[in-house]
Amino acid sequence: DAGVIQSPRHEVTEMGQEVTLRCKPISGHDYLFWYRQTMMRGLELLIYFNNNVPIDDSGMPEDRFSAKMPNASFSTLKIQPSEPRDSAVYFCASTPQGAGELFFGEGSRLTVL
Amino acid sequence: AQKITQTQPGMFVQEKEAVTLDCTYDTSDQSYGLFWYKQPSSGEMIFLIYQGSYDEQNATEGRYSLNFQKARKSANLVISASQLGDSAMYFCAMREALSMNRDDKIIFGKGTRLHILP
Image: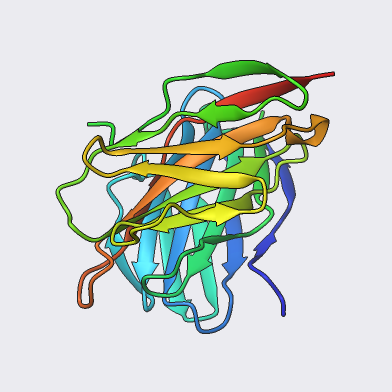
């Protein structure tokens, strides 16, 4: 079975550019989470969805960040405009309701110059 | 307020010794779950073990066990007979609101970097 699929794996962009990160969750999973990992702040929950509906976006750092889940098999995290401090690894993860494991993608490493 | 606390930023342990990684949590929910994940230098997140709040016995998976003390709100990870390959970052996480019709939320602690010495 395919796991959570994220793209791109690596992105290098210049400050001010738009960045779009993509995620395909495991089929049948109710929940999709976006996390950001940095050395200073660890793994921060940015936003999560239940059955494609955003439930809690309180972790989104500012209005430059937006996330969508137009259907059960696809989600995007967009940063516009990007800034150097957005450099991090962004993880997408999915899980069924009440399950004992959160399934992670391999992450998207973003570098903003 | 931080809900998952890992007080050990880094640890050094001799190979073959047992290791305990600390994790305390804060929740007012009665139903919740606790996870541990390992992140080696390659960056992937590897699931290790899970404990539900209603599970009466401590979870075990091979060399990993979770020392769950509900009254103290602690969920320490114990690794028996450590190996060089155990060197990695370890994250504790909590899932709240496992009951029906409530939305689950999963948050992580800041992690503990474990170094196994030969």
